[in-house]
Length: 227
Image: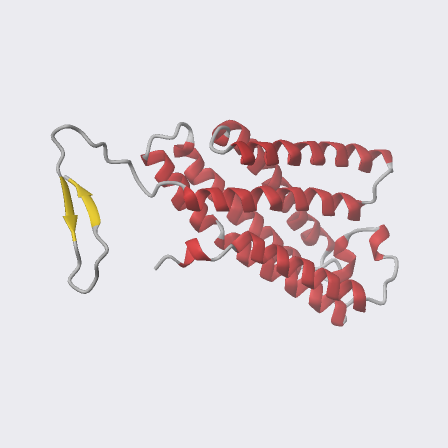
């Protein structure tokens, strides 16, 4: 079964988030929620909060599943000799799962239920996102030029967003949208790149190797096997 290669988990999670936030924003009685933070959409204990909390918990679960193809891809890259991917094959999927779990807790523990627990879950999501970008710089640079550019862009967005938030130019809602959007973009690129990485070490072809062509009984396509 290769379901983890066929399903674009991060893109699916992003779609769920956009749909749930849009539904919550259109139905919430709190017209000033955008002046505070996204979590206010889940604190009204009505239909809109159900949309927001359910959507963010579901998105977190889907993001956690994206750790599977990333782990398999990085393990294959490590076996094939890509530098630095050995430790990344453990640490990166762990932080992806932590990010997903944090989002699940954000949805299950809304502000109206427990402010302290909700804020700790939000801190976990932020710390996981920052940790993933740090791991990219430490272990994944050079794996993909496009991935490197997206990671750099995400760092710039996070830094400028934090400055704007502290200066009072941006609201927390805007900062959350920019920060999480940039991290999701990077995570989607990492998932897609991981699915294209080799599944194992490349078998070298030498002068002593023989190429055998096997043709299945009920087909005409031949497959080559190096021995």
